Amino acid sequence: MAPGPWHAAPAEADDGWVGTRELPGYRAGPVVVRLSDLPGVDATHLYFDLLLLDTRGRTEETHSGLCPSLRRDQPLDQRSRFVRVVAELLRHAPDAERGLAGLGSALTFIRESGVDGPQLAAAAQRIDAASSEAALVVSLCHVLRLSFGDTDAGASLVGVLAKLAPGVLTSGELEEQVRLLVRCVGKAHARRRLREATDFDLLPSPELLGV
Image (cartoon, helix red, strand yellow):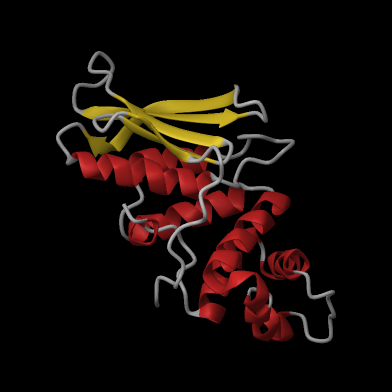
C-alpha cells in the first residue's frame, strides 16, 4: 500500500516546533506534544507531555507520563520524529466538548509502544476508536483533502459508499460522505476501509511529514 501523495498540511499560523533539539516539542493546531528529561523520575527513558490549548493558546488540559518507547540514549532525530508524528495524529482527536476525555488508553499505548512502523497504524486505530464521531470525521476529511485535494477527495469515496450504503444519496459534501462511512463501519474501522478504498495509508508517517 502506498503512503499517499500528500506530504504535510500547509502550516497553520500557530503550528511549529517548540523546545530544543535535545528535548523537542511540536504544536499541531490545539495540541502540543513535547518531551522532558527527568532523571529523578526515570534515568533511562524520557517523559511525555501533551497539552491541549484553548482558542487563546492557554493550556486547557494535559496528559503526562513516562515514555518507555523513548530511551534517553536513542538518536535525537528519533525524538523529533516522535513528537511531530504524535502531534499530527492528535491534531483533531480532542473533541470540542469532551477534550481529552476517553483518549487515555490510546495515549498510554503511544507512550509505551511508540509510533514506529506498524505501531503508527495501531496508534491511529486506537485514537480513532476513542475519538468522538465529530472529531474522527474532521480528522479523516483532513487526510483525504491532503491526499486528493479539495476537488477529488469526495470522489475517492463514491465506490466504497456505493458498496456500504447502496441507494443512500448524499449532498456530495465530503463531511457528509465521511460521516456516512463512519456510521456504516464504526469508528475503529473507518480509516482501514478508507485505506482499502484509496490504496493509500492515510497516516502521518515521518516520510510524509519530512522528519
